Length: 392
Image (cartoon, rainbow, N blue to C red; front, side, top):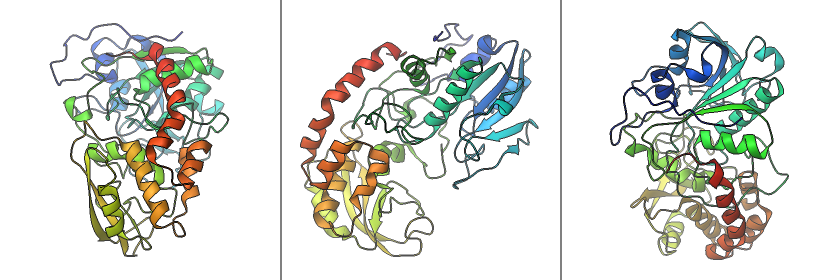
Protein backbone atom coordinates (compact mmCIF):
# COMPACT_ATOMS: atom_id res chain seq x y z
CA UNK A 1 0.00 0.00 0.00
CA UNK A 2 1.48 3.34 -1.02
CA UNK A 3 1.77 6.01 1.62
CA UNK A 4 4.05 8.44 3.36
CA UNK A 5 5.15 8.73 6.93
CA UNK A 6 3.32 11.31 8.99
CA UNK A 7 5.35 11.25 12.21
CA UNK A 8 6.69 14.66 13.14
CA UNK A 9 10.41 14.98 13.84
CA UNK A 10 11.44 16.21 17.26
CA UNK A 11 12.89 19.38 15.73
CA UNK A 12 10.80 21.20 13.18
CA UNK A 13 12.69 22.75 10.24
CA UNK A 14 13.26 26.48 10.15
CA UNK A 15 12.90 28.55 6.96
CA UNK A 16 15.52 27.36 4.47
CA UNK A 17 16.13 24.39 6.75
CA UNK A 18 14.84 21.30 4.99
CA UNK A 19 14.94 17.90 6.66
CA UNK A 20 15.30 15.08 4.13
CA UNK A 21 13.81 11.62 4.50
CA UNK A 22 16.78 10.20 6.39
CA UNK A 23 16.68 13.12 8.86
CA UNK A 24 12.99 12.53 9.50
CA UNK A 25 13.46 8.76 9.75
CA UNK A 26 16.24 9.17 12.30
CA UNK A 27 14.22 11.68 14.34
CA UNK A 28 11.12 9.49 14.44
CA UNK A 29 12.57 6.16 15.47
CA UNK A 30 13.06 4.45 12.07
CA UNK A 31 9.34 3.57 11.88
CA UNK A 32 8.93 1.68 8.57
CA UNK A 33 12.35 -0.02 8.87
CA UNK A 34 12.15 -0.90 12.57
CA UNK A 35 12.63 -4.60 13.21
CA UNK A 36 13.49 -5.34 9.57
CA UNK A 37 16.39 -6.85 7.65
CA UNK A 38 17.25 -4.09 5.21
CA UNK A 39 19.12 -3.59 1.97
CA UNK A 40 19.92 0.05 1.16
CA UNK A 41 20.11 1.44 -2.38
CA UNK A 42 22.33 4.48 -1.99
CA UNK A 43 25.48 6.36 -2.90
CA UNK A 44 27.52 9.27 -1.56
CA UNK A 45 24.49 11.60 -1.80
CA UNK A 46 22.65 9.57 0.85
CA UNK A 47 23.60 11.69 3.84
CA UNK A 48 21.91 13.39 6.76
CA UNK A 49 21.71 17.16 7.00
CA UNK A 50 24.83 17.00 9.20
CA UNK A 51 26.77 14.90 6.70
CA UNK A 52 26.53 11.42 8.21
CA UNK A 53 26.13 8.67 5.62
CA UNK A 54 22.71 7.01 5.52
CA UNK A 55 24.45 3.62 5.42
CA UNK A 56 26.27 4.35 8.66
CA UNK A 57 23.14 5.78 10.30
CA UNK A 58 21.08 2.68 9.49
CA UNK A 59 23.98 0.36 10.35
CA UNK A 60 24.08 1.88 13.83
CA UNK A 61 20.30 2.21 14.28
CA UNK A 62 19.18 0.19 17.31
CA UNK A 63 16.25 -1.63 15.73
CA UNK A 64 17.34 -1.88 12.08
CA UNK A 65 19.41 -4.75 10.71
CA UNK A 66 21.23 -3.37 7.67
CA UNK A 67 22.57 -6.34 5.74
CA UNK A 68 23.57 -5.11 2.28
CA UNK A 69 24.16 -2.05 0.15
CA UNK A 70 23.24 -1.51 -3.51
CA UNK A 71 24.93 1.14 -5.66
CA UNK A 72 23.74 2.87 -8.87
CA UNK A 73 25.62 4.30 -11.86
CA UNK A 74 28.91 5.93 -10.76
CA UNK A 75 29.21 3.56 -7.77
CA UNK A 76 28.81 3.96 -4.04
CA UNK A 77 31.18 6.93 -3.87
CA UNK A 78 29.80 8.57 -7.03
CA UNK A 79 33.29 8.83 -8.52
CA UNK A 80 33.26 6.30 -11.37
CA UNK A 81 32.39 7.29 -14.94
CA UNK A 82 32.61 3.86 -16.57
CA UNK A 83 30.12 1.51 -18.21
CA UNK A 84 30.51 -1.46 -15.85
CA UNK A 85 30.99 -1.32 -12.08
CA UNK A 86 31.80 -4.45 -10.08
CA UNK A 87 30.47 -5.45 -6.67
CA UNK A 88 32.54 -4.35 -3.71
CA UNK A 89 32.63 -3.79 0.02
CA UNK A 90 31.92 -0.67 2.01
CA UNK A 91 34.94 0.21 4.11
CA UNK A 92 32.90 2.10 6.71
CA UNK A 93 30.30 -0.59 7.51
CA UNK A 94 32.02 -3.67 6.15
CA UNK A 95 28.87 -4.52 4.19
CA UNK A 96 28.75 -6.09 0.76
CA UNK A 97 27.99 -3.58 -2.01
CA UNK A 98 26.00 -5.03 -4.88
CA UNK A 99 26.45 -2.99 -8.06
CA UNK A 100 23.29 -2.19 -9.99
CA UNK A 101 25.41 -0.85 -12.84
CA UNK A 102 27.37 -3.99 -13.61
CA UNK A 103 26.27 -7.47 -14.63
CA UNK A 104 22.71 -6.55 -13.72
CA UNK A 105 20.77 -3.34 -13.18
CA UNK A 106 18.00 -5.01 -11.19
CA UNK A 107 18.52 -6.70 -7.82
CA UNK A 108 18.62 -10.47 -8.24
CA UNK A 109 17.06 -13.07 -5.90
CA UNK A 110 20.55 -13.91 -4.63
CA UNK A 111 21.23 -10.27 -3.78
CA UNK A 112 17.92 -10.01 -1.92
CA UNK A 113 18.34 -13.23 0.05
CA UNK A 114 17.62 -12.72 3.74
CA UNK A 115 16.09 -9.26 3.30
CA UNK A 116 12.54 -8.19 4.05
CA UNK A 117 12.91 -4.51 3.09
CA UNK A 118 14.71 -2.29 0.61
CA UNK A 119 15.35 1.39 1.30
CA UNK A 120 16.31 4.01 -1.28
CA UNK A 121 18.26 7.20 -0.54
CA UNK A 122 19.83 8.90 -3.57
CA UNK A 123 19.73 12.50 -4.77
CA UNK A 124 18.06 12.84 -8.19
CA UNK A 125 18.34 15.96 -10.36
CA UNK A 126 14.92 16.12 -12.05
CA UNK A 127 15.51 14.86 -15.61
CA UNK A 128 13.96 11.72 -17.08
CA UNK A 129 17.24 10.40 -18.44
CA UNK A 130 19.24 10.72 -15.20
CA UNK A 131 19.49 7.05 -14.33
CA UNK A 132 19.08 7.05 -10.55
CA UNK A 133 15.29 7.03 -10.91
CA UNK A 134 15.59 4.04 -13.28
CA UNK A 135 17.60 2.21 -10.63
CA UNK A 136 14.85 3.00 -8.14
CA UNK A 137 12.19 1.68 -10.52
CA UNK A 138 14.02 -1.59 -11.12
CA UNK A 139 14.61 -2.02 -7.39
CA UNK A 140 10.90 -1.41 -6.79
CA UNK A 141 10.04 -4.13 -9.31
CA UNK A 142 12.39 -6.55 -7.58
CA UNK A 143 10.92 -5.69 -4.18
CA UNK A 144 7.40 -6.30 -5.48
CA UNK A 145 8.38 -9.64 -6.99
CA UNK A 146 9.91 -10.82 -3.71
CA UNK A 147 7.40 -9.38 -1.26
CA UNK A 148 9.77 -6.83 0.28
CA UNK A 149 8.77 -3.55 1.82
CA UNK A 150 10.16 -0.57 -0.12
CA UNK A 151 11.02 2.60 1.78
CA UNK A 152 11.98 5.81 -0.03
CA UNK A 153 13.83 8.43 1.98
CA UNK A 154 12.74 11.49 0.05
CA UNK A 155 15.00 14.29 -1.19
CA UNK A 156 14.39 17.60 -2.99
CA UNK A 157 14.02 17.98 -6.70
CA UNK A 158 16.94 20.42 -6.94
CA UNK A 159 15.61 22.27 -10.01
CA UNK A 160 12.19 22.77 -8.32
CA UNK A 161 9.02 20.73 -8.24
CA UNK A 162 6.84 23.15 -10.19
CA UNK A 163 8.18 23.24 -13.74
CA UNK A 164 7.60 20.34 -16.13
CA UNK A 165 8.66 20.41 -19.77
CA UNK A 166 9.41 18.41 -22.85
CA UNK A 167 7.81 15.52 -24.68
CA UNK A 168 6.46 12.60 -22.69
CA UNK A 169 8.16 9.32 -23.56
CA UNK A 170 6.67 7.56 -26.59
CA UNK A 171 4.76 4.41 -25.53
CA UNK A 172 6.82 1.25 -25.78
CA UNK A 173 10.18 3.03 -25.80
CA UNK A 174 11.09 2.46 -22.17
CA UNK A 175 14.74 1.73 -21.37
CA UNK A 176 17.33 2.45 -18.69
CA UNK A 177 17.48 6.16 -19.61
CA UNK A 178 13.69 6.32 -19.93
CA UNK A 179 12.14 4.05 -17.33
CA UNK A 180 8.60 5.39 -17.32
CA UNK A 181 6.14 7.65 -19.14
CA UNK A 182 7.59 11.01 -18.03
CA UNK A 183 8.47 14.27 -19.76
CA UNK A 184 12.12 15.29 -19.99
CA UNK A 185 11.70 17.51 -16.91
CA UNK A 186 9.27 15.86 -14.53
CA UNK A 187 9.09 18.24 -11.56
CA UNK A 188 8.75 15.46 -8.97
CA UNK A 189 10.75 14.14 -6.04
CA UNK A 190 11.93 10.53 -5.93
CA UNK A 191 9.27 9.79 -3.32
CA UNK A 192 6.53 11.19 -5.53
CA UNK A 193 7.89 9.27 -8.50
CA UNK A 194 7.88 6.08 -6.44
CA UNK A 195 4.20 6.60 -5.67
CA UNK A 196 3.50 7.10 -9.39
CA UNK A 197 5.48 4.02 -10.43
CA UNK A 198 3.81 1.83 -7.82
CA UNK A 199 0.36 2.89 -8.98
CA UNK A 200 0.81 3.15 -12.75
CA UNK A 201 2.92 -0.01 -13.08
CA UNK A 202 0.52 -1.82 -10.74
CA UNK A 203 3.34 -3.13 -8.57
CA UNK A 204 1.24 -3.55 -5.44
CA UNK A 205 4.22 -2.67 -3.26
CA UNK A 206 4.31 -2.26 0.47
CA UNK A 207 5.59 1.25 -0.25
CA UNK A 208 6.46 3.81 2.39
CA UNK A 209 7.76 7.28 1.49
CA UNK A 210 9.38 9.11 4.37
CA UNK A 211 8.48 12.68 3.49
CA UNK A 212 10.76 15.68 3.88
CA UNK A 213 9.97 18.47 6.29
CA UNK A 214 10.19 22.08 5.18
CA UNK A 215 10.50 21.50 1.44
CA UNK A 216 8.22 23.45 -0.89
CA UNK A 217 7.73 22.85 -4.59
CA UNK A 218 9.05 26.24 -5.69
CA UNK A 219 12.40 25.69 -3.95
CA UNK A 220 15.64 25.26 -5.83
CA UNK A 221 18.34 23.33 -4.05
CA UNK A 222 20.10 26.42 -2.74
CA UNK A 223 16.86 27.41 -0.99
CA UNK A 224 16.97 24.29 1.21
CA UNK A 225 20.01 25.00 3.37
CA UNK A 226 21.28 21.51 2.52
CA UNK A 227 24.90 20.98 1.44
CA UNK A 228 25.39 20.46 -2.28
CA UNK A 229 27.03 17.11 -3.06
CA UNK A 230 27.86 16.44 -6.71
CA UNK A 231 25.31 13.69 -7.58
CA UNK A 232 27.62 12.38 -10.32
CA UNK A 233 31.13 13.28 -11.52
CA UNK A 234 29.93 15.78 -14.15
CA UNK A 235 27.05 17.32 -12.17
CA UNK A 236 28.99 19.86 -10.16
CA UNK A 237 26.60 22.71 -9.45
CA UNK A 238 22.98 23.72 -9.37
CA UNK A 239 23.54 25.71 -12.57
CA UNK A 240 24.61 22.54 -14.35
CA UNK A 241 21.60 20.67 -12.99
CA UNK A 242 19.31 23.44 -14.28
CA UNK A 243 20.81 23.26 -17.76
CA UNK A 244 20.94 19.47 -17.89
CA UNK A 245 17.37 18.64 -19.07
CA UNK A 246 18.07 20.60 -22.26
CA UNK A 247 21.83 20.48 -22.85
CA UNK A 248 22.24 16.92 -21.58
CA UNK A 249 19.65 15.88 -24.13
CA UNK A 250 22.18 16.55 -26.90
CA UNK A 251 25.15 14.60 -25.56
CA UNK A 252 24.45 11.36 -27.43
CA UNK A 253 25.16 13.24 -30.68
CA UNK A 254 28.60 14.22 -32.00
CA UNK A 255 28.57 17.32 -29.81
CA UNK A 256 30.65 17.89 -26.69
CA UNK A 257 28.53 19.11 -23.78
CA UNK A 258 31.61 19.98 -21.78
CA UNK A 259 32.60 16.66 -20.28
CA UNK A 260 36.35 16.85 -19.86
CA UNK A 261 36.16 20.55 -18.93
CA UNK A 262 35.67 22.34 -15.62
CA UNK A 263 32.08 23.27 -16.48
CA UNK A 264 30.16 20.39 -18.06
CA UNK A 265 26.74 21.34 -19.49
CA UNK A 266 27.74 25.01 -19.34
CA UNK A 267 29.77 24.75 -22.56
CA UNK A 268 29.03 23.00 -25.83
CA UNK A 269 31.18 22.57 -28.91
CA UNK A 270 32.82 20.42 -31.56
CA UNK A 271 35.76 20.63 -33.95
CA UNK A 272 33.29 21.31 -36.76
CA UNK A 273 31.25 23.96 -34.90
CA UNK A 274 31.37 27.71 -35.58
CA UNK A 275 30.99 29.12 -32.07
CA UNK A 276 30.62 32.74 -33.19
CA UNK A 277 27.74 32.02 -35.55
CA UNK A 278 25.99 29.77 -33.03
CA UNK A 279 26.33 32.29 -30.18
CA UNK A 280 24.90 35.03 -32.40
CA UNK A 281 21.98 32.86 -33.50
CA UNK A 282 21.15 31.81 -29.94
CA UNK A 283 21.45 35.37 -28.64
CA UNK A 284 18.75 36.54 -31.05
CA UNK A 285 16.42 33.57 -30.55
CA UNK A 286 14.42 35.13 -27.71
CA UNK A 287 15.50 32.70 -24.99
CA UNK A 288 14.89 33.99 -21.48
CA UNK A 289 17.22 33.77 -18.52
CA UNK A 290 20.38 32.84 -20.38
CA UNK A 291 23.27 34.42 -22.30
CA UNK A 292 25.79 33.04 -24.79
CA UNK A 293 29.47 33.66 -25.48
CA UNK A 294 31.56 32.21 -28.30
CA UNK A 295 34.57 30.29 -26.99
CA UNK A 296 37.10 27.63 -27.97
CA UNK A 297 38.01 24.77 -25.65
CA UNK A 298 39.86 21.45 -25.65
CA UNK A 299 38.29 18.66 -23.56
CA UNK A 300 40.80 16.62 -21.57
CA UNK A 301 38.61 13.52 -21.64
CA UNK A 302 35.38 12.14 -23.07
CA UNK A 303 34.19 13.26 -26.51
CA UNK A 304 36.80 15.11 -28.62
CA UNK A 305 39.45 14.66 -25.93
CA UNK A 306 42.55 16.60 -26.96
CA UNK A 307 40.79 18.26 -29.90
CA UNK A 308 40.19 21.99 -30.15
CA UNK A 309 36.45 22.68 -30.30
CA UNK A 310 34.63 25.76 -31.44
CA UNK A 311 31.85 26.35 -29.00
CA UNK A 312 29.56 28.42 -26.84
CA UNK A 313 29.54 29.15 -23.14
CA UNK A 314 26.04 29.25 -21.63
CA UNK A 315 25.42 31.43 -18.58
CA UNK A 316 22.21 31.52 -16.55
CA UNK A 317 21.17 35.14 -15.99
CA UNK A 318 17.71 34.57 -14.46
CA UNK A 319 16.65 31.10 -13.44
CA UNK A 320 13.06 32.26 -12.98
CA UNK A 321 12.73 32.72 -16.74
CA UNK A 322 15.15 29.99 -17.84
CA UNK A 323 13.46 27.15 -19.76
CA UNK A 324 16.17 24.51 -20.15
CA UNK A 325 14.27 22.16 -22.47
CA UNK A 326 13.41 25.09 -24.74
CA UNK A 327 17.09 26.04 -24.66
CA UNK A 328 18.17 22.54 -25.68
CA UNK A 329 15.70 22.51 -28.54
CA UNK A 330 16.84 25.90 -29.78
CA UNK A 331 20.46 24.78 -29.70
CA UNK A 332 19.42 21.72 -31.69
CA UNK A 333 17.49 23.79 -34.20
CA UNK A 334 20.35 26.20 -34.76
CA UNK A 335 22.85 23.36 -35.15
CA UNK A 336 20.51 21.87 -37.72
CA UNK A 337 20.38 25.18 -39.59
CA UNK A 338 24.09 26.00 -39.35
CA UNK A 339 25.69 22.55 -39.51
CA UNK A 340 23.17 20.21 -41.10
CA UNK A 341 25.84 18.07 -42.74
CA UNK A 342 28.18 17.85 -39.74
CA UNK A 343 25.82 17.47 -36.78
CA UNK A 344 24.39 13.97 -36.29
CA UNK A 345 21.02 15.24 -35.16
CA UNK A 346 19.14 11.94 -35.23
CA UNK A 347 21.31 10.57 -32.42
CA UNK A 348 19.63 12.85 -29.89
CA UNK A 349 16.62 10.54 -30.08
CA UNK A 350 18.46 8.14 -27.75
CA UNK A 351 17.41 10.42 -24.87
CA UNK A 352 14.57 12.33 -26.53
CA UNK A 353 12.51 9.22 -27.38
CA UNK A 354 9.76 11.16 -29.10
CA UNK A 355 9.40 10.53 -32.83
CA UNK A 356 7.22 13.58 -33.47
CA UNK A 357 9.73 15.84 -31.74
CA UNK A 358 12.67 14.30 -33.56
CA UNK A 359 10.98 14.70 -36.94
CA UNK A 360 10.27 18.35 -36.16
CA UNK A 361 13.88 18.93 -35.09
CA UNK A 362 15.20 17.32 -38.25
CA UNK A 363 12.97 19.71 -40.20
CA UNK A 364 14.34 22.63 -38.13
CA UNK A 365 10.84 23.76 -37.24
CA UNK A 366 10.52 26.73 -34.85
CA UNK A 367 10.70 25.71 -31.20
CA UNK A 368 7.23 27.09 -30.45
CA UNK A 369 5.79 24.71 -33.04
CA UNK A 370 7.72 21.80 -31.56
CA UNK A 371 6.48 22.57 -28.06
CA UNK A 372 2.91 22.65 -29.35
CA UNK A 373 3.28 19.05 -30.55
CA UNK A 374 3.69 17.66 -27.07
CA UNK A 375 1.54 20.10 -25.09
CA UNK A 376 -1.59 17.87 -24.91
CA UNK A 377 0.41 14.93 -23.55
CA UNK A 378 2.30 17.19 -21.14
CA UNK A 379 -1.04 18.52 -19.85
CA UNK A 380 -2.16 14.93 -19.29
CA UNK A 381 1.04 14.26 -17.35
CA UNK A 382 0.32 17.24 -15.11
CA UNK A 383 -3.06 15.69 -14.34
CA UNK A 384 -1.53 12.25 -13.81
CA UNK A 385 0.91 13.51 -11.22
CA UNK A 386 -1.69 15.36 -9.13
CA UNK A 387 -2.58 12.33 -7.00
CA UNK A 388 1.06 11.52 -6.29
CA UNK A 389 2.49 14.87 -5.22
CA UNK A 390 3.18 15.24 -1.50
CA UNK A 391 4.25 18.87 -1.08
CA UNK A 392 2.74 22.28 -1.76
